Length: 494
Image (cartoon, rainbow, N blue to C red):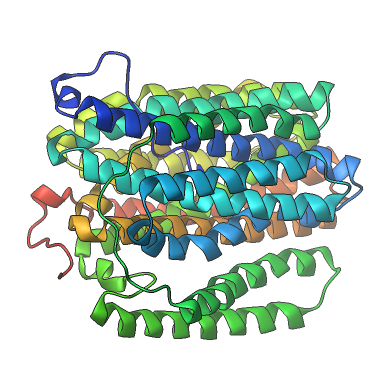
């Protein structure tokens, strides 16, 4: 999560409504503490997107290698997140929270002192281990604390706070990168993470009950081979595109990934009969959850790939300074946050279709337009397109998160949150790998990635891929319902 992994969930306004007042003060304090930590994680991820062009130059690496700054993060998330459903039931809220922020802070410190690209990748992996636990913890806790009739409003208010991270991140990163270098990004993030950990240690209380179910180590091993193999295999597409690798690692990784994933899924079906699964797949017995996950997969596939290409286009095709490139994406991120309360109210009152259909149309339309951009395109045109895309995503992600988890019974919230995170990360890693590969092939065929015209050509093809994927979500938007309104919808069996 992206991120934005990412930017789809966010919180509370300064003037809570009557519905928000229904939530006890101690519960709201828990939500705010978790949101602070999630803010730090999203801020970290959005700042690194702008740093990729600098890493290419400063560390003398290729765009394919630089993509691993994001891909390694997502790969780790994809491997760790499937276990979070179990962890959230086995350990207390405080234990998971403090462990997550300790890992994240350690990874951030390691990045500050990194001696080279390899050490930076290790730091990102450690950071991702903490982030992977934080996002499912936030979603599961909110679903347990917020009553059904207020979930849309709360998710909308959450978006105000959480959208500050992607709003501030690129602009802050641009300033720091232009004046102090890429290490400064981590220097700024570390004290915020440490402060959040201290606040959580002081005031965070436990939510829900824990279980004594044993941790199935074999499932973890299968998860590593399954999700890790697939994401790694997809990342090798970039090496082939660059002409610096062979097809053998890609084929071997994908075969291992598919076999490992199949064995992992089989193992979970066996273990869930005794409620001992690492990731309980009974969440997919809910039609609403399954449809939402299909939509989430397509949106994440298009979104994460696109936000990786946009900084490259702005800096390498339009030749913008890093700070200016960050300012271009600022209005879109702010729009996502400011629209949050309105989106939440609309969801509570009218359900999903009124949000998802126009959201999918706007996102797909913006990406189709981006596929026409050139090295001569005015910057303001890109700003408008980026803002429209952000609005479309805001209309899509918040109702998807809310409707998918609301389709489940409370027992399965933690597993549902883990599935959401896994889908986002696997789809995101795939989107980044495919779009960066397409970008590299086309740019090299038209000169080189140092040529503005060649970069524009490569970017257009990448945006075109995102547009085709996003167009499919327009159809899916008609089939997803708010659980209360869905005919025949039921939660997974107990």
